[in-house]
Length: 351
Length: 149
Image (cartoon, rainbow over all chains, first blue to last red; front, side, top):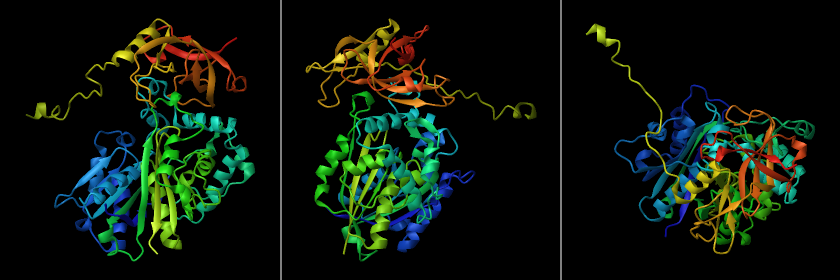
């Protein structure tokens, strides 16, 4: 099957509250930017796929309006996932690998500011046993944090370090929402939201959009001499029966890592979709990332656009490889409570 | 014409589910039992008990139909303490969300713990179900769990 490369990526500056700026208006600049960077237009795109969540907009088929950001005449081949746009990328890769398209445009968008994200996220859970209890996303994440702390898989100091470091890294990310440095004292005096998670252990409410372009190996060299190949990609999901899962580990990440043979690769950089501070040291250890620089963009703790942050982890890894001429990058995207659904992506720069 | 014109753009709009949904052969029994203040789990061939009752074993994909009573007591496997409940929460005073492994079960159930302080809770602590006075055959027939005395 054909190899597939990422050849372009653009991200809107992450906003705390985009106000009257609607999803299409967030999306249009990034779509135009990826096209302009490559000197192409929608006419050069074989397949278009988006990721978003109608619940955020509070209307059925709200994702269709996203298409207003791109040119849809003459008619285009198009699809949508009600998931993070990382999964729109996955669908697009399959299309290109199967030879149905030579290029694909992937985009994601989300505004969390208009609603109450905690209550909205409750609705993604099992509708019989879990949703009626209205568990908020922070309390669910905190259940896993406590298991990891209690079993000494991570420490409270590592959680604090994840937050403090994310702020330092954000300084070099012009799109980051939070760039204020944070002292350990300030962290330690921060109130608990849902113990053992403090408010600062949680990602900020974020609005934004991102776009990416991928191309087949036949086409990629038309755009760049150094394509960033998607060498490996795998995603797996665990049971929706939260109480039957072992929250001290991640069988999905372990099997994806094994299948992609990640243990043999010396990664130069990694971007992980770790929305809560405890998830970073947890995945760092699970993936044996030891000294690998992680989340140099600051990661989700400094800007976490729902339905986009997973694609952004892949996009930021791509940007690191391009800008710093690095060889191997690892990206991770997730969805669901307590890292239920995980995707691992191995990117490699053509030397 | 001018008299009716004012009503032209008016229409009632009620957001609702216009259908009834069955909870299936396993979960319907679980919910009926809750109405009688009983908690049911399902047992696999390997004698693993899933509670609340699961329709299948996510590891082996075995269909589960063998119902067995569990609880109403159990132990805390993990918990998070909600310091300031939001409007959407069912309890409006500080409480815990918890994973509770009921007596006789091998998996945990998500529910709430109330009637205690954060410092009273620990992993392994025993809790028991407090029942709603107005059962509706839903998961909220268990009002919440409380620490066993």
